[in-house]
Length: 279
Image 1 (tube, rainbow, N blue to C red):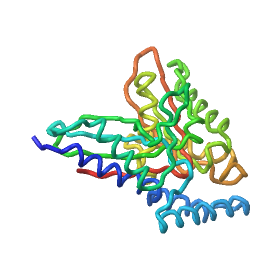
Image 2: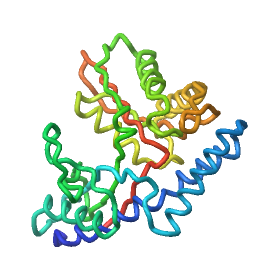
Image 3: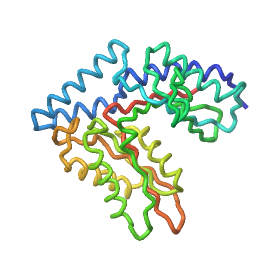
Image 4: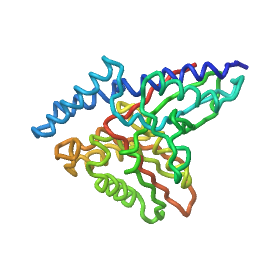
């Protein structure tokens, strides 16, 4: 059994929240820069140049890449041989509280979805936990802006809709989103499970490196096909037209019921932020 003081998580989340908001992951930077090299349309070229300039300034000066510093999504993989001393939930929220204060990050969370009073410190975090073998903790902080979150959708398709129905729903979701999620986007897709699990899988898919394809060749092929079809929509960077509407389509899947075909699409803007540490 390996023991952790809850404060260790607080410190890690504080630092990750600041870093994730100010430094775009290397795979995202590389994909955007490749899109710029491949982009034939002058307007789209100019927009991609500004995006590249923006995340460069953010990293050099430790300032947010985007003014929407998001709701803080925290993914925890906790080894089954780990014991955490202290209140896990409180430690995580304290890390968010410290990170958003020390990093001068915008506080965007309201304490009640209808009465809309800001909590003032960007808490609570959206927490996702998974128990895994071992004695380590893998901690990922992913600030999620709502310009793209609002464009996400979930459908309970019929099994008879099949893969063509899944593809049609994904393409319709991206097309209807248009310029709103600040393309070029990353498209996270969850297929299977239940109503809630499909949405979780779609968000989890956004955490996967753009350089890593689905290990199942069938789904890897589906990712490639959907990326090509999405980019053929011509929405382009920031919706002004161009070759690149999406940088990647990442699919996660799991078993489901014989009577259902849940599909969720979680869209993320070109600021697809996440930082991971293993404790």
